[in-house]
Image (spheres, rainbow, N blue to C red):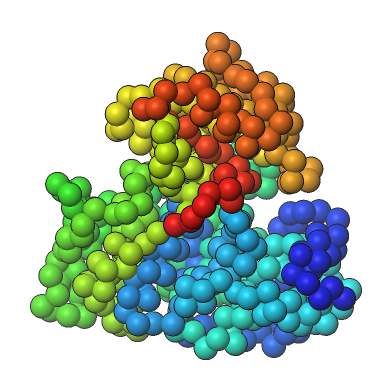
Length: 433
């Protein structure tokens, strides 16, 4: 068996015929063989098309501000695989991951597991060993058949529903919503963090017997000058705490995209739903929200021209990126861009349109069959943007160098798309958030 983390990761990619194989039976069987320990006293699962990682980051920061011991499982990673498993805000060590992988290997017998399933089981084992107060589990793809769903969450969150991974989840928002509702459990809260959930999400959640709490219905946000207000329905009169104020005001978030307030509101709603178990501390929530940092989410890396790094990799995320650009000073903006073969690249281009003066397109060569060469990426962009200025580059660093060479000092280089792009750019920077 491998003895180094990089060797384990390579080994895992060869153990299943498909890189993605949805279904719970195999991974549940292995989890049972491992003893199926509860990963924490309390579990929050977070699904959705976009905003999952940000919502987990808000939850992690707020819970830790309360002094609780928290584990967070997220994917994919930007710089190091270890980022996927955090315990008390520290990435898992290589040795701990390797030991967990060995335990999984000994338990699985002849059962094939995917790369993601190995990682999910390892995170659950490490969380169980760490005696956590709360485990935060980000769903990888969909919900109902995602490996994370072998754990019954005490509270589930669905952030947004957009068109993505249609080959696995269905062709429309209704179908996708039904799949994502699969993380809900009967009699337990399901937080819906979008103002326009598709009927499929709501119908499935109610059919599951979940207690649905919706943004704009059961809790809401109201932007104010340099602040925003969060309010929950009957917050002061539901028998838990008669003197608790009906709403809480928070300072502006450090995460800058417009939708981050909705993600923070959903995270707050999850903690409110758990208040009888975990208590409620609005001051600690405020500290946590202000402390939240997350790489690759409209991350400004400075410079002249300014470099912005973002992981918008589907049309819904690109639309949010467009809203953010519209709110910024109008300066020449060049994109350093690529996306994986299963992404709607034309839809991403259509969402941004003329806001991008020039597209510097590059290949993704480290994603196996999901990678694309630069010419293929450009061809898909031209479906939506036939007149766009597009140049091809061998890799992201060549693309970024070219963009910086032609932009004025007051311009903006926007490196975005796949996590592979954001990670490659951030890896070259002298310091990280």
